[in-house]
Length: 181
Image (cartoon, rainbow, N blue to C red; front, top):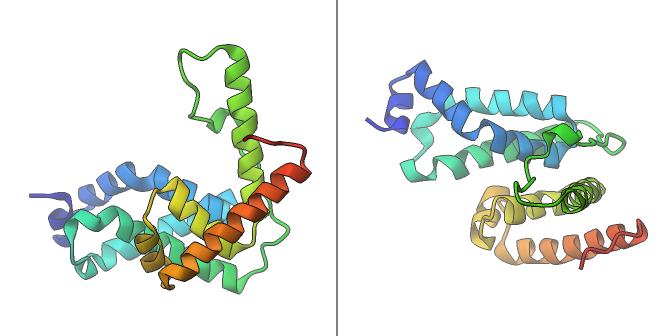
């Protein structure tokens, strides 16, 4: 019996497995979107509860991951509508970096961390609508069509937001004196 079937039967162990499999991914998504780690954790926890309660709405079992991302994105969008989060910026702790390569020399490791932190901060300065599409497209590697489905917009809207978001991101990084071409 697969994971989705076990969820449909109400198995709490299946929910724990889903949380283990997708929790980090969904938390990173929520943090990028709402820029607050505590709020992101709350949204992800709420999303797991919603997913468990509404698992029967999932039509295609193989789309569990994207369905969970949609639930988290909707939760983030709802929070962004009800509160003003413009002055909250999340600064990722160095010990949270997981991008370090074993063979890299110390200078490369420092540069990778610096670039990731700078890009992370720059993404948080983007307006939500650009931050959302950039996170879904680049970090989750969703296609234009999938991104459009998640945010319930037309594909051309997604393409426009990606282009504008990239332009704004480049401007933010260049103003900070960081150029990663």
